[in-house]
Image (cartoon, rainbow, N blue to C red; front, side, top):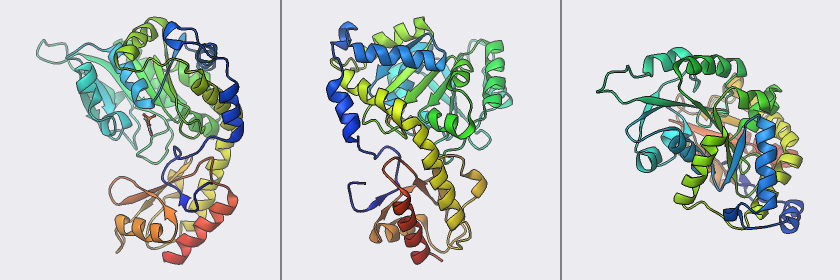
Length: 345
Ligand SMILES: Cc1ncc(COP(=O)(O)O)c(C=O)c1O
C-alpha cells in the first residue's frame, strides 16, 4: 500500500502495479472508434468467450456498461425491474430516467436476491395504461448487502422464468469474479444464465479503468452506437484494455486471498460488543459492521477509526463496511485487527 493509512473503503482504491503499467506501455494500439485497436478487440473477444456470450464492448465504467444495457434492451416509457438495494437503483444517479427514459421498479429481494416470485409479482399486466416490463436486473456479488453471492441455481431458476415471460435478464456482475472464486461456479455458467452481463476490471481485479458489456451481437451493436452517443468512444483504449487483460490473467486467483482476509477479520472481531458482525454474511471480500444496537453510531466509529489510521466506508443504515483488496496484505490485516480491538470493546 502506498499511503500510510489503511484503506478499507473499497476494492476500487488499488493502484496499478509496475508489471501492469508495463503491460499497458507495451500494448499494441490503434483507433478503437474505427474498431482498429488490437488490444481492445482481443479483450472483447476473449471475455465474450470466457462468459459464453456472442460479443463484448469495452467501456470506461460499470455505470456506463449497465446504462448501455438498459438503453439497448428497452424503449422510452418501459419499466425495468431492479432490486431495491442494487447499485443501478441507488448509485447510478437516476441515469435510466435520463438516458433511457425508463422507469425503475425497485423490488425488495431476499438479502438482495430476486427470486422468480418477486419478479412475477412485479411484472406489469398487459393493459394499455401500464408501462411495459422489458428488463430484469440482478447484481452478483451484491455490493450494499456486503458482497453476498446470488447462487447460480437461483439465477438459472430466475432466468428460466424470465425466458418464459420473454423478458431479458441482465446481471450487474461488477464483482462476478468474486462470486466465481468464492463458489467455483464457472464464469461461463454465469454468462449463460443471463441475456447480458456487465463485468468490471477496476474492482477486485485491480485495473485502473474499464468494464465490459457482454451479450448477443445485435444488443452489443446497439450498445456500441449508444456508447458513442454517451461520449464513451475511446481512441487508443488498448492501453486500458491491456491493464484489464493483465488483471484477469494475473489477479483473478488473488481474490481468494481477499476472501480469506475478510474471513480472518470477521473471526477476529465477531465477539466485539460495540458492533455486530454476522459471520455467515461474510461471503466474499466485504465485511459489514452493524452498530444499530450499540451506544456508538457508525459515523462516530468511522471518525474514531480515521483518527487511528483506518479509512472505512459507511454501509446501509448504521453500518460500516470493510472491503479487502489487492493492496492489503497480512501485515496490514493484523494491524487493522489490532486497531479495531484497541479502540472498540
Ligand atoms: C455492483 C456495482 N455495479 C456497478 C458499479 C459501477 O462501477 P463504476 O464505478 O466503474 O462506474 C459498481 C461500483 O462500485 C458496483 O459496485
